[in-house]
Amino acid sequence: MVNDRQLEVLINDVYEYHGFDFGGYSRASLKRRVDRLIQLDGFPDFTVFLSRVRSDAAYFKHMVEEITVNVTEMFRDPHFYKVLREEILPILATKPFIRFWHAGCATGEEVYSMAILLKEANLLHKSLLYATDINPLVLDTAKKGIFQLRMIKSYSENYMASGGKNDFSQYYTANYGLAKFSEDLSEKMVFSLHNLVSDGSFNEFDIILCRNVLIYFDKDLQERALQLFDDSLSKLGYLALGTKETIKFSSMQDRYEQIHKEKIWKKIK
Amino acid sequence: MEENKIGFKVVIIGGSAGSLEVLMKVLPRLTPISKFAVVFVLHRKSAEDSTLEELIAMKTVIPVKQVEDKTPLLPGFIYVAPSDYHLLFETHHQLSLDTSEKINYSRPSIDVSFESAAEVYGPQLTGILLSGANSDGTNGLKVIKQQGGTVVIQDPATAEMPYMPRTALENVTPDFVLGVEDLLQFINNIK
Image 1: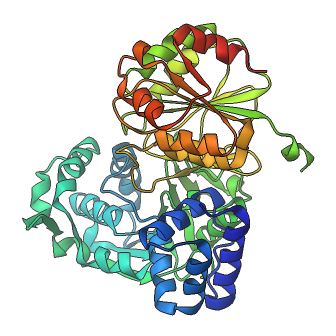
Image 2: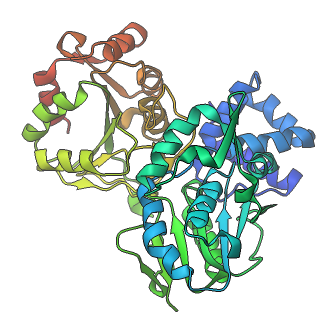
Image 3: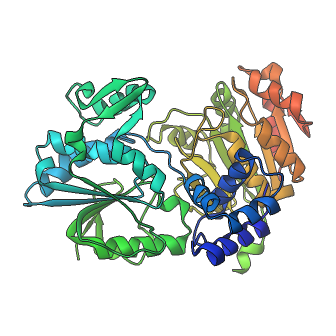
């Protein structure tokens, strides 16, 4: 296992050689990801791994793809989607045009979940879903909208628990163990690379969803990302975080109002 | 901060099928813990509710803290790993969460928490592994041992599902193998 000092050397060298800053990442999780990568790629020790990361740009790219956590699912936490469906979307529906930002979208399952909600609320035609991640590989998957068929049973259960009333199978076609989601859903999606550590605001949104991304950041970087979201939200816009994430200790807290006990906040000032 | 340098002990109790029954016997007779923190990492259904936290809180006088991302870890409290997240330990007594791949078909995984805590707390950590039908926990106990911590395994003869403690016993030399009653005394005697 890598020790604390080695991890700091890696963070430092990655910044120096590639300009990529992992300095604000939570150490406990980052350490596990590095250990996993060293093991997966069969490096005999940390030194060999480090020299490869420094000297091989293609390997560094692979490292970034593997180190970031890309686990996601459709309608994760069905109750959250139920609240979106029943309370948030009806308010957003009064707007002529609705802009969404899924920050840290990974392979896009949550973006497709949102598109399904919007389609069912008859709002998809006037919505635009921006979906960003730092990992180009997962964005390619997200653009295709092709997910593992073995996951569909649990997605379908989540969908129903979120208040979905249709036959979930109408949204995809199954083939060779894969489920390809309908292009009707993806035509309002825009995928692009964006790094919450170093990139700025690029548009104004009515709702920003960033669920289970901030858990990988330390407090300072969380504050930076929250500031970026604040800069990118329209007044009365919504910010949605993961079930165990909060804005409670951030400086923007008093400008936001929490929706019940959900991890959804409304920008009131 | 100066307080961060003051170490305290951490006890992590890991378990799967059959472990809740053990806890229901032990929890009501636990005396207050002012000098250390107890963390439960139990395999649980991936729903977002807090039934397990409420159940544990009902059975003990020790206050149960809700775990969110970057929750500070303090002596005197019980913490429960939330469903569908791995629970990790940062330096400076902070908990963090992770949704990466399941380990041993489990999230939270006991191995993940044992390993992460062992690196931060070393000899100050005690890992207790209870009943279960899965091999989660064994690798974590090995790391706790390597880092100088204390390894406690439930006596498989007293476990409803002996597979988990038995697998651990076959791979790690424990400091203690305890039945339910002795486990209670063990925790109450931690200073």
